[in-house]
Length: 291
Image (tube, rainbow, N blue to C red; front, side):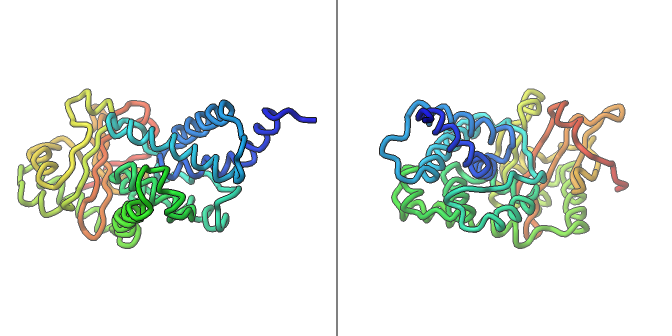
């Protein structure tokens, strides 16, 4: 007869793919998702399953609390790599209403949507992912985010409005290029008003840890603040295709030093992501475009 620990390990493995999918949706990074699943196993193996009726739901709850802790930590030091544009893991197990739908969703989540998810608060992101992507009820979500069911519903609703904007009206390639070129011209020329007109009121500017060491701020929110920081900057940057999407590259001697990625919705820039980590830059597929 199998011991309880061995049985629990086998049950955990049957839910691993689903748990990794949930974690990836919340964290936006395959590496972070794997770390979250491993931490979940450590907590589960210490806690045991006494009194647990719905193992899949219990595992998802523990995983979500792990992800919530990680998101809150990242908000204080936002430096993790963004795996946007890569297919997420498939899903399986309990609490998934339609596995086929989730697999399609995993393949369809692109850079703009991931970047918009990055602008959400940890509570908004968790409530949205659990309810809209994995069909948990707000009664189930409430204790996870430490709010009432009504408050959890409001968190998901706020998140949904921003995500639907990103998913429903992304810039087409030609329009994206126009906006990025206009942004570069305004930044180079120190045209504060032109920058302000290009930015969504709730725009977020994020920089990785290497860009922060180079003098950038880790995170800036709001159009006036972002425009103030970028006015008169980006003089050496060039318009480029980055993973097939128009952005900016600052290069020296043919090597990229900083990549600017943009999420654009309804003709407005909703997020700018600065990447300066050499390893991540080496992995970029980029090409300078003629201005």
